[in-house]
Image (cartoon, rainbow, N blue to C red; front, side):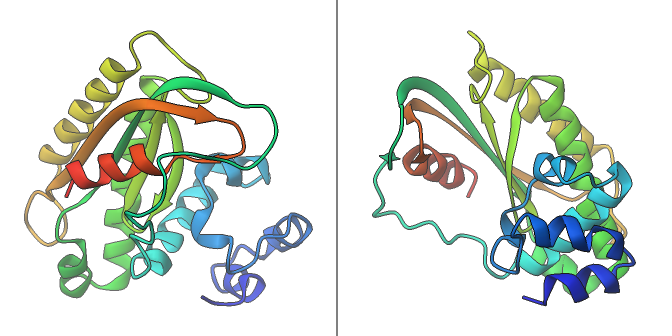
Length: 206
């Protein structure tokens, strides 16, 4: 990972150096930033899209760090509550091959367009974009805001994402294939790691 301040300067976004430094964001935190995180830092919408696309490129070789031996939930401290959560994981099929077929700028545009389409579909149904994992996205339905039909909302968002992807050609000349996994389960909400349900969604999308 690059030095974050130099990385921002290289993208022409050096105006955000102070916000990143004051909030303790270094190369270790960079891959875990979400659109909501960047918004809280005061990053403009267009600049957020640029940063998320660049983060996706930096992160694509470190995706899949979760281990199957970890517990389904872990409460570290503080108040906790048990609730139903639906997790969706979606990514592009063959993105590594596409990164070799396209030049860097075109590949970034493909990832940015995919992320934008996913984010719009997720927001439409009240989902929470939790994390960018390379070209993929991890989404929660039921946290932080819960609805009686969160599982249904996740499925509808997934169908919208599929519709968007099949109606759009990538610069390599084909319709990019999208892989989506959805899993629902009871989790403990607090200071936690939602590992089991997340892994189930990732496995279903594999």
